[in-house]
Length: 246
Image 1 (spheres, helix red, strand yellow):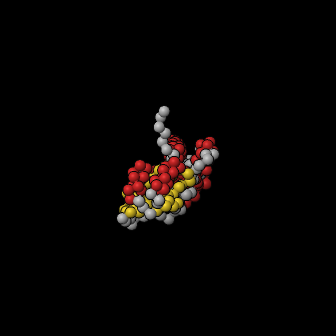
Image 2 (spheres, rainbow, N blue to C red; image 1 turned 90 degrees about the vertical axis):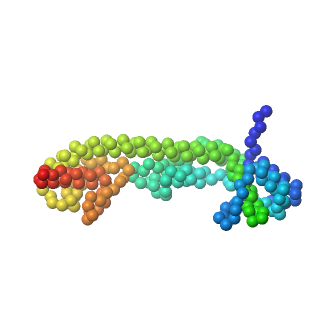
Image 3 (cartoon, rainbow, N blue to C red; image 1 turned 45 degrees about the vertical axis):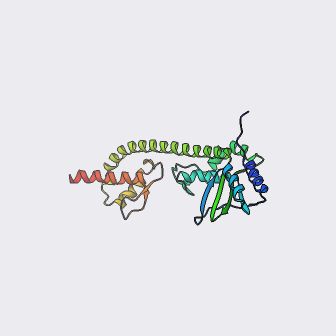
C-alpha cells in the first residue's frame, strides 16, 4: 500500500504530540519573519527532533486559510499587473474577476472542502535563534499553478493579438500617410497643431487606434493623442517637407 503524504493538520498534530511528550506548551499565533533574528529552516522530522532535544518552554504555530482572491492577485502581480492595469485600452491583463470566472469550477471544489487551511508555520526561539518549519498542502500549490498558468496564457495570447493588430495597422497606415500627404486641405495648413485638428476631423475614423492604447505627443506644444494618429500626422508632414525642400 503506498505511503500517503501527511496533510497539514496531521503535521500539526505530530508537533503537538512531540510537545506534549515533553510538557511544552503549544500556542497558536501569526508567523512574521523579521530581519533581526537568525532563522533555521527545518523539515517536519527535523522540527520534531529539535523540539524533543531542546525542550522549549513554548512552541508557536500559525494556520493560513485559503484566500482565493489573494492567490489571483499574487499571480497577476507576479506578471507585472497593478490595480487598474486590466482596465486600460488594449490591456494584456485579465481582470481578477475574469480569472475567478474562468476557474470557478475549481474554486467551488476547493471551497467545499471541510478544511480550507493550506499552510502551517511552526516556530520557537532557542539561544537567540528561531527554529522554523513551513508545511503547505499540495492542493493549494496546484491551484496556484492553475491560476498562474491561466494568467500567463492570457497575457501571451493578448500580446500575440496586439502584435498582429499592430502589424495590420502599420500596413493600413502606409497608404493613409500617402493619401494625407497629398490632401490639399492638409498641405496648405501650417504647423502641426492645425494639421492635427484637420486630421482628426477628416481622417479620425480611418486611422486604426493603437491596440494597447498607447499615446504620443507629436510635438512639445501639442496634446497627447493616439500613437497611430501621431504617426500619420508627423510622417505625412515629413513627406510634404521632403517634396518641397529636397
